Every structure is written in structure tokens, then in C-alpha cells.
Image (tube, rainbow, N blue to C red; front, side):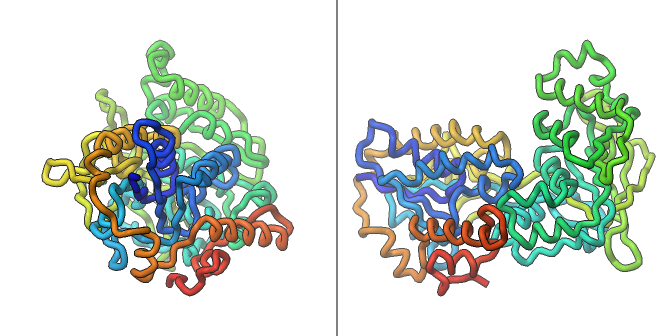
Length: 457
């Protein structure tokens, strides 16, 4: 029997586990899916916006995989720390597949980024998604009239939409009650989503973009003068060569630029060709706005500064300019790429494949693609592992890894513990007159799972 540990229970980890147990070439594969959190599903639970229920319904497919009798979920297990270093994990399993994602956001690298009221979109998403690491985050939304979101990807669209939505639209979601209350009391009336390049180069998808224009009580607007700076926007013939998503995006933005405002209580403005150069502070030490430099196309797909500046007032700034992987103790790491060096998923140490160590997902390829991109990525890694299975399975293992984890002082949350968390969240929702509501803190999650003694600070 080949025993494999998959570190991470998000889509890439679950798809890797599914591929390993469902193939027929190597019989008897058993997989333990380990996760630092006591809840499974990774970014599907903690990254997909709570009002995107269709995407979140993917949890049902992931659940079916994790309920396979050949797969065991072990949450609340942190790999790479003193209790379970990477080398010890490899002693307990024939192979380890790391699917740990890209947890660090990129900084803007400009003056004033340390001011109160400046946050990463990652932190904001984690907070309203109920990630237990974000339980202590504070967003002073009642004191905010205007917000600036720096970035032009789907995460930027998500946080813009959540800021602009009314509480009645968010109440049916599983958003934690503290976040729902803060957003209900929000004073945000204007949200500017700002990109340094043009609309034809934006990274958001058309479905998410269109949704901004359908929010009740919200006017969505794009500056016609900024759109006209994009050479592909101004030239329909050239635009025809763009990918379909970019063409559809331009059509949506063209429609917004030509619409008169309805006078709704909230407004979303999409701004282009503006590069942030400084976060401006007020006398109270909080953010008061962002200074942007106007950019212009450089003819090579990039932009160049023009020396013309514009200040946009804001009491909240969220940066959403990409993610980076973080090193995991005991694994090689390429800091420039934010990934683990690999060949077809095999971890490389000093240029050579490390026996029994593999990667999949963002830590393998970088923060690119959509959820579905993880499936072929995971299959490639699983295929490499299965090719190595004959040599890997020759090694004797010390016994059931679960006992070794407990002996190391860890308190794994098994599948029944996760089901207990689900039941507790359903009961919390009923008590609040809502559907299932996430428990947003470590003590609450571990207490519901029956492992309160291992609650984290």
C-alpha cells in the first residue's frame, strides 16, 4: 500500500488526492489530506466571496472526494513547525504533496502604506470570509465615506462589490456576524477601483465586471477620457484581435461610460492609467487619500509616467496587486517566483528531484489561473508521483501517521470534527435568523470540533 500525505485541502490538494485514489495503475493508494485549519476546502471556503454562492457550491464536489473511504481529512495540523517539520512528515508517508497556495499579498512599495486604514485586499477577504487568522482584523467602515481599491483583477472586483452591497443582500450568505454587522453600519458611499494600465489589459472576468453594474442602489461608471487612452479601446479593428474576455470587458465599460447616473446612494468608479505613488495621511494619522500619477501606453504593452498627478480622497485603501507564495520550513524556495522549484511537480533540491516530495497548485506554478486550473496541475503532479510509486513503496513506514501526530502534541480534527463544525455553524445561523453562519475564530472552531484544548492564540 502506498501512503501519501497531501498538505492543503483546497482545490489543488483535493484534486491531487482524487487522482491518486481513483487511478488504476497503482492499487491500494491511501491519502491523508492535512490542513493547518480545522475546516477543509481552502480558498473555496475562505477566498471565494460569500455572495458568490454558485462558485462556493464547489464545496459539494470537494466534499464528495474527501468522504472517499481511501482519503482521510486531518485538520488543525501545521506542517513545517517544531511539532511536525517537513522531514518528519516524509518519514511518516511514502510521499508528500504540498498544495499550500500563495498566502502573502504584494505590497505597493510607496510612502504612506503603513498608515491606519491601508490594508491588503487579502486581509479584507479573510475577514469577511471568516478566516480564523483574521478574527482580530479591524476595519473602521462607519468612518469611511470613500474607498480606493488598487488593482484590476477579480479580487479587486470582489472587495469593491462587497463594499458597495447593502446589508440585505449579504444577510443570506454565510458571512460571519461581526463582519456583516460592520458592513451594515458602513458609511462607504464611493468606491474607486484603480488600475495603472488600460481596460484592455485588466485581469477581471466579464461576469464579475458586469455584476458591479447590477447592484441595487449603485451607479457604476467609467471615465470616457481614460477609456479613450487605450489604443485598443479606440480602435475597434485592433480590439477584434483581443481575447474574447477583454473584448467583452471593453463593451461593458463602454456602456458604463455612456450612461447617465441614476442618483443611487452608492457609486463605483473604474479608473485606468493611474499609478499610485503615495498614500496621503490626514492630521489624525489615518489615510486621507491616494496620490496617483497619470500613465500612458508606451507602445510595448506597458505604461510610462506622464508627470501629471491626481489625488483621490479615501479613508480606506485596499491593495490588490497580486499574491506571492511564502517559504515553508524544510522545503527549497525560489523567492523571485514565490514558488518551490520543481520538474513536473517533483520538488527539486540543488537541481535534482527530491525523492518523495511533490508540489501542486499555486506553490508550484504561482498565483495564476482560476479554480479549474488546479485540476490539470494536480493531475500532472499525481502522474509524476505514480511513476515513482514502485521505488517509493519499498520504504517501510513506522505505522499509522495519526498516532505519530498525536504523539507530537498535535490534535488533528478528523472528518467527524469538521461535521461538528458544520452543525455548529448551522445552529449559529438559526439563532441569528440566517442560514449557516461561519464561526470566525480559532477557539470557536476548535471548540465546535471537540478539540478546544488545542485552541491557538
